[in-house]
Length: 277
Ligand code: MG
Ligand code: MG
Image (cartoon, rainbow, N blue to C red; front, side):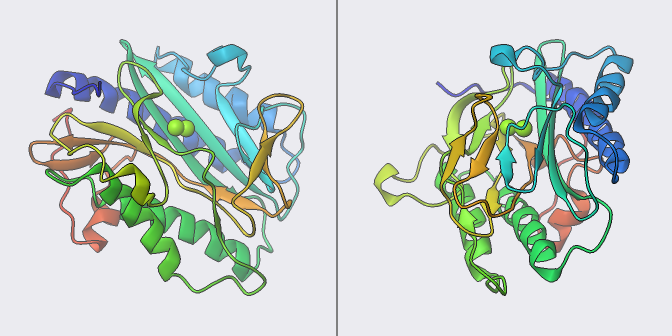
């Protein structure tokens, strides 16, 4: 069963989403050469606790951070710790928060220092762009697979990177979110025709949309730490995520400061008014 939220519940998720946005902003700005992923975790933790919110990552199946910090060939679920960021690295920072039992979840890819070539620029831009293309499909009477198609078709439209190809990671995907961080339905980042069109999207539907793309293989495996997911061929990857609500008045991006207004305007989509008024 897919949980359908009331406007009041979506407002709580917006509160959580804004805290996630602030935590990600602070951690992203701190992601410079010489800083450890553990220090980024402490910065995000301070923001979450400063708002009196709770982390949904900390303690999740024993996870020890409030962020996932996934560097270079690490795709997702990297454990924050002693790893020092180097000039030229890219890092996915993923973070979540709970307010009064309602969850938010988002991730960004950040360039550490400088000197990132066009291939990495395009990798991150393609991943982020595919997320927004998926978000643009969150509308009444669309189906779940329309979001997947929006994501995949955006990626397929991009020029291939100069030294490779894009691998759309299939082992992980988006997810319903609300009274728990991970809920039904699971959202593929590609179209699988065998699965049909999926559920019809109705007001009150909330989904975390999170494409993960590598510069090579879509195949991944988990390291011995039982968390960190890396690409099988060691190619670097990007990961972007937002939590999105569908309301009677259209989509609203709960984890974006502006609700997604600027990015969705470029795609011809008008966002709903802020659930917090
Ligand atoms: Mg996340
Ligand atoms: Mg997520």
